Each structure stands twice: as structure tokens, then as C-alpha cells.
Image (cartoon, rainbow, N blue to C red; front, side, top):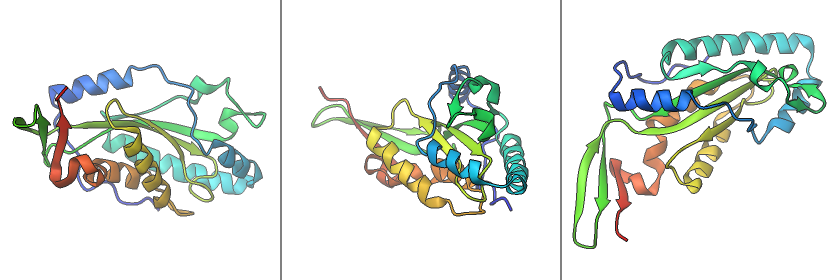
Length: 211
């Protein structure tokens, strides 16, 4: 059973969002693999063919739903792009069934206020209705969702490493066996994650421009 889709999705594209999506989706796929790939590989190799088939069905259903809802922001990455990668002496596609890449951003309906502290006495404010957060790659192994969570990597051009480490901890805590979790991850990043960061409390993003 797939968990519910995110609470809302953005239908209209702004010029800024289009530029961001083109920039990210045109990037060459990197060889970076999830940090838990060794554990995933071990679990996949221990599974029965019947259990793998069940996982494949769940993966296909979840991926189809995500690509339908996020048709502009998401794409499936061909497994062939990692055909040369070996996992425990096994081919990559013997462990990973599908790969999803999605650009996640805040909703335009919930604007933040960007506060730039120019010096000790002067600051400027302006509303922001579109904030590109990060590019998320989800690796769906043949053990998901029955035995292991998906693997994932993410890249952000502006979020600090401390914030990304905090996000990793939150995503890891959301998964439980036999439960598809990708929609929940996307929903959390899009609607809740930024509000948990110290520099974005109260929907006000604080930056200093002082030298």
C-alpha cells in the first residue's frame, strides 16, 4: 500500500523554477551511491525470488505515481548509466531495480520572508514564493519496501552541511518495514524541513551580508 501523496502540488511553473529544473536535470548523473548500499546489497542477495517479485510490484506502483504527480520535477534514471558499477561482485541491476531523481522545492502558496542583514543597523526583507531546496536521488533496491528502505543521495547548492545531516537523520527515521516511504520523504522536505532549521524559524530566512 502506497502512502498518500503530498498535501498539495504546484501546478504553475515560474520562470525561476523552470531555470532551476533545466539546470539540475541536465546535469550528468554522478556515480555517488547511497551510504547504506552495502547493507542493502547484503539483504537483497539473501532474499527469495518471490519476495523480490513482490518488492518489484510495489516499486513500480510507487514510481509510477510519483512520476505522474511530479511530471516536471522528476525523472527515472536509466539503470544502464551505472551498468559498470559492481556491488559485492554483482551487477548493479541485480540489487537496484529503479532510480528516481526529483527536484524538491517549497510551495509557492506558503511564502517565506528573506531577511538580509546588511550591517548592524540595516536589514532588508522580501517575500520568496519559490525556494529550490535540493535534488534527491532515490535508489529502489529489490529489498524495498519489504526489508530495507530505499537508498538515497541529495545535493543542495545552498543548504549547509549541518542541515543536510539533520535531514538525513529525519528521513532514516521515517521508514518502517513493508511501508513505501518515498512520498512521505518528498512531503516532509517540501512542507516541513525548512521550518526545522534555526535560520528559517517562523518562515523568516535569516542571512547576513555584512563583511
